[in-house]
Image (cartoon, rainbow, N blue to C red; front, side, top):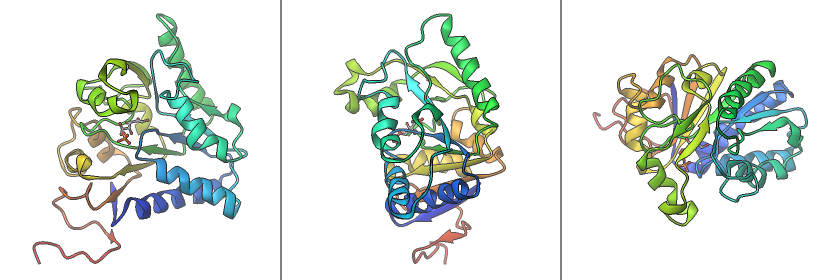
Length: 260
Ligand code: F6R
């Protein structure tokens, strides 16, 4: 795992956006895996800027989002489909038909079929070239909560109390916050060609330390990325604060290791 630490969220987001821009330039029909939440917002703002000001062309790009809440229609402002349309898709020249988000409205036996089809569609698209990830304070990636099988594929999942509490403010309180979601599995994420994980702020520091330097364990799902051949974490200093090793090669601000 490569770890890139920048002094600000903006700088880390710009570097991550550059990775995506380079990929899309080299492979115009690249398949991007996308995330929602507060973490990738600046990354998406930068991609929009690259499109508007530097002509970055998304016309052939295809996307698969990591996850979606169950029982929220796409027009609900808290649905991840709504989030993606508002924060990225409507501002770039992507063909909306090429953008996929799991359907949180499927019910009962349809759920399994929908999840299998999501996996089939990712395979049919040629696999995901680059996956954007955030991380939960409990180490979740997508909605793969602690204890999820490291081999899991796209599935229906129960959100933990900690995730429900973290995301409740968006819903105006815990009562309105969903209990269930559909998510790509850890196995799905491990199959992507390149992982770009972003984490900002001190609330992520413990999860990041566990993921980057702790044991490989389903208790911290992001630690599975230690086994990924091409995973990079883009962190701000607050999210990196609990890392102990000091050998990350791209500290681009004056950093004095505390053992010197
Ligand atoms: C979102 C997702 C989640 C978030 C994580 C962090 O699609 O899959 O894993 O990345 O919950 O959320 P924020 O960025 O809001 O702190």
